[in-house]
Length: 257
Image (tube, rainbow, N blue to C red; front, side, top):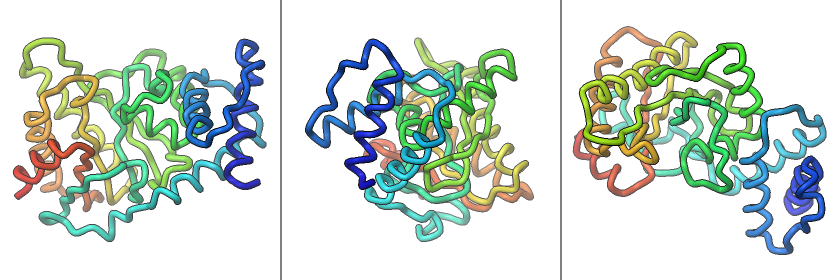
């Protein structure tokens, strides 16, 4: 199969799973097909699926990521010893682990084609990730606490693992507790990485998007927490502050300089 054939196969299989979508036609355009496929993956509940589907999905997702271009953390220049700043798509970064700003349910974003980092990571990793996360939550027996972290495989992403953490949601004035919880997110991820002997970790801007944590204060907490942790004896030697928006790049550039 080529990419067009894989994409159409995956769409048809996902449409066939749900009786209300079985009569839906596959759109002719590539852009529309990609949107439909991602949307169907986003709304799919965590349940078993055939090995053939996973084989085709994995081939498709890896080819799509390769086409976007993979960035090697080892090829980037640190802004200071062990600390990096990179503006780009974290799902295309090759390192030991990337951090996902998850919600307390931990099974990803179910909004079709939403642009949050949680949706992107689940979309480009593959549906195995949601299945893994759902099983992890079933065994835990309760939703994930804010400030804690869990680790999963990365499946079809260039990184090896994903560190999932739930940041604080800001609905009013920022409190000291909010700041402590956000620091806990960074600390928990770094501790989990160290426990698993990982060397490199890339952080997204936790809680600054849908969770409305002020960007400048969040960056300050992130940098301070990472620097404090890096002073310890640890396997983690490289930490990337990954940003997507120009605003965050300006903030982190100022803090790290």
